[in-house]
Amino acid sequence: HHPQGSTTVMPCPVESMTSPDGCSALFGEKPDGQQCPQITCPKALGVEMKLVCTGGCCPTCWAPDHVVSLDRHTALENPAVIPPAPQAPTTCSGARCFEPQCGEGFAKGFQQGDCCYSCVAGR
Image (spheres, rainbow, N blue to C red):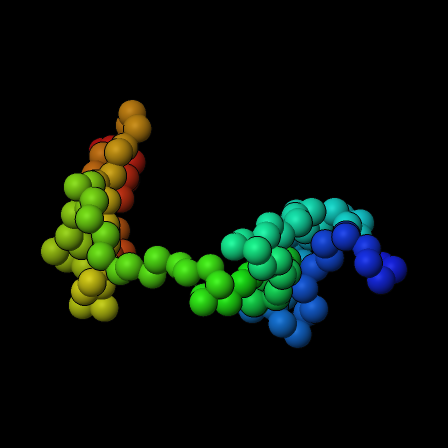
Protein backbone atom coordinates (compact mmCIF):
# COMPACT_ATOMS: atom_id res chain seq x y z
CA HIS A 1 0.00 0.00 0.00
CA HIS A 2 1.07 3.53 -0.68
CA PRO A 3 0.58 6.54 1.60
CA GLN A 4 -2.59 8.61 1.25
CA GLY A 5 -2.12 11.11 -1.56
CA SER A 6 0.46 8.94 -3.35
CA THR A 7 0.16 9.20 -7.11
CA THR A 8 1.52 5.69 -7.77
CA VAL A 9 -0.97 3.82 -9.97
CA MET A 10 -1.41 0.31 -8.58
CA PRO A 11 -3.15 -2.73 -10.12
CA CYS A 12 -6.90 -3.08 -9.63
CA PRO A 13 -8.12 -5.40 -6.85
CA VAL A 14 -8.05 -9.04 -8.00
CA GLU A 15 -11.80 -9.43 -7.34
CA SER A 16 -12.57 -6.66 -9.86
CA MET A 17 -10.45 -8.17 -12.66
CA THR A 18 -12.19 -9.94 -15.54
CA SER A 19 -9.13 -12.15 -16.08
CA PRO A 20 -6.93 -12.35 -12.95
CA ASP A 21 -4.74 -15.03 -14.58
CA GLY A 22 -4.11 -12.77 -17.57
CA CYS A 23 -3.21 -9.91 -15.23
CA SER A 24 -0.76 -12.12 -13.30
CA ALA A 25 0.90 -13.05 -16.58
CA LEU A 26 1.03 -9.38 -17.61
CA PHE A 27 2.52 -8.23 -14.33
CA GLY A 28 5.04 -11.07 -14.08
CA GLU A 29 7.69 -10.23 -11.49
CA LYS A 30 7.36 -6.44 -11.85
CA PRO A 31 7.54 -4.61 -8.51
CA ASP A 32 4.74 -2.41 -7.15
CA GLY A 33 4.38 0.78 -9.11
CA GLN A 34 5.73 -0.80 -12.32
CA GLN A 35 2.85 -3.15 -13.21
CA CYS A 36 0.56 -0.39 -14.46
CA PRO A 37 1.09 2.70 -16.60
CA GLN A 38 1.72 5.67 -14.34
CA ILE A 39 -1.06 7.85 -15.72
CA THR A 40 -2.60 10.99 -14.34
CA CYS A 41 -6.14 11.80 -15.35
CA PRO A 42 -6.79 15.04 -17.17
CA LYS A 43 -9.32 17.67 -16.28
CA ALA A 44 -12.14 17.54 -18.81
CA LEU A 45 -14.43 20.54 -19.03
CA GLY A 46 -13.26 21.59 -15.59
CA VAL A 47 -13.97 18.21 -13.99
CA GLU A 48 -11.15 15.99 -12.77
CA MET A 49 -11.51 12.55 -14.33
CA LYS A 50 -10.85 9.77 -11.85
CA LEU A 51 -9.05 6.43 -11.95
CA VAL A 52 -11.51 3.55 -11.84
CA CYS A 53 -11.29 -0.22 -12.18
CA THR A 54 -13.71 -1.62 -14.75
CA GLY A 55 -12.52 -5.21 -15.13
CA GLY A 56 -9.04 -4.57 -16.49
CA CYS A 57 -5.70 -5.21 -14.80
CA CYS A 58 -5.01 -1.52 -14.24
CA PRO A 59 -7.25 1.48 -13.62
CA THR A 60 -8.28 3.84 -16.41
CA CYS A 61 -9.43 7.46 -16.36
CA TRP A 62 -13.18 7.92 -16.25
CA ALA A 63 -15.77 10.67 -16.12
CA PRO A 64 -19.56 10.41 -16.36
CA ASP A 65 -21.06 10.71 -19.88
CA HIS A 66 -22.83 13.96 -19.02
CA VAL A 67 -19.42 15.50 -18.27
CA VAL A 68 -17.46 14.09 -21.19
CA SER A 69 -19.84 13.05 -23.91
CA LEU A 70 -18.61 10.11 -25.91
CA ASP A 71 -19.54 9.45 -29.50
CA ARG A 72 -21.01 5.96 -29.31
CA HIS A 73 -21.82 5.68 -33.01
CA THR A 74 -22.17 2.17 -34.33
CA ALA A 75 -21.95 2.74 -38.09
CA LEU A 76 -18.51 2.10 -39.44
CA GLU A 77 -18.17 3.78 -42.81
CA ASN A 78 -14.87 2.46 -43.99
CA PRO A 79 -14.09 1.57 -47.59
CA ALA A 80 -11.76 -1.22 -46.41
CA VAL A 81 -14.66 -3.11 -44.77
CA ILE A 82 -15.76 -6.25 -46.60
CA PRO A 83 -18.52 -8.74 -45.75
CA PRO A 84 -17.70 -11.90 -43.75
CA ALA A 85 -16.46 -14.88 -45.76
CA PRO A 86 -19.37 -16.79 -47.42
CA GLN A 87 -18.35 -20.01 -45.64
CA ALA A 88 -18.30 -18.29 -42.21
CA PRO A 89 -20.55 -19.64 -39.42
CA THR A 90 -24.02 -18.03 -39.13
CA THR A 91 -22.92 -16.51 -35.80
CA CYS A 92 -20.76 -14.11 -37.86
CA SER A 93 -23.68 -12.12 -39.25
CA GLY A 94 -22.95 -8.47 -38.57
CA ALA A 95 -19.19 -9.05 -38.27
CA ARG A 96 -16.97 -6.42 -39.87
CA CYS A 97 -14.06 -7.79 -41.85
CA PHE A 98 -11.17 -6.15 -43.61
CA GLU A 99 -9.42 -7.20 -46.80
CA PRO A 100 -6.28 -9.02 -45.59
CA GLN A 101 -2.96 -7.55 -46.69
CA CYS A 102 -0.82 -10.67 -46.91
CA GLY A 103 2.96 -10.74 -46.82
CA GLU A 104 5.17 -12.72 -49.16
CA GLY A 105 4.48 -16.45 -49.02
CA PHE A 106 0.93 -15.91 -47.72
CA ALA A 107 -2.36 -15.63 -49.57
CA LYS A 108 -5.93 -14.64 -48.72
CA GLY A 109 -7.64 -17.78 -47.50
CA PHE A 110 -10.29 -19.05 -45.13
CA GLN A 111 -9.86 -21.00 -41.92
CA GLN A 112 -12.78 -23.11 -40.70
CA GLY A 113 -14.73 -21.35 -37.93
CA ASP A 114 -13.42 -17.84 -38.65
CA CYS A 115 -15.72 -15.00 -39.67
CA CYS A 116 -13.30 -13.27 -41.99
CA TYR A 117 -10.71 -14.19 -44.54
CA SER A 118 -7.16 -14.24 -43.24
CA CYS A 119 -3.67 -14.77 -44.60
CA VAL A 120 -2.71 -18.42 -44.90
CA ALA A 121 0.60 -19.94 -45.90
CA GLY A 122 0.82 -20.15 -49.68
CA ARG A 123 0.66 -23.59 -51.22
